[in-house]
Image 1: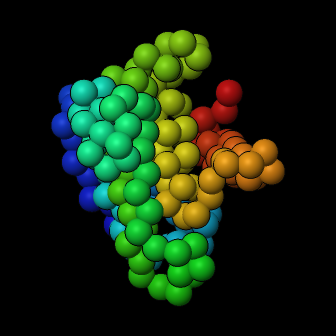
Image 2: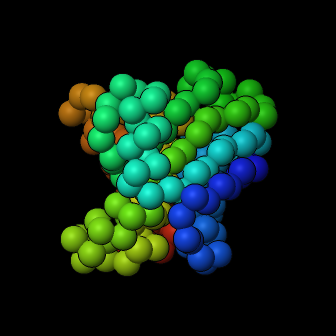
Length: 146
């Protein structure tokens, strides 16, 4: 899996690696081993602008996902899964609120966003349970336990 990483926020190489490793592990768990994901790390103002432009929502959020394929296509070879955008500012705030490390929060957001790229959603209770169980399994495997 190839990661195209862009940072509009001041992020360390260590935190970038956490995000990249989590995206790769999550995509692999979904059966997408060959392909690419674009990851952008920004601040609250940056993610708000993207949210407004592409989703019509004038609000910041912690992460956004923009899938670029149908779920069934992941096992067929090299795929462009899509784009992930994470607000480092919100991630830092949420890590503090939840009482865990910034590494764990960024891994959570990266896994969550990548699962959306793979076709997972949380619109129904059953979908949410499946997605969040998958997410926690990936985080546990990477050593980001609660």
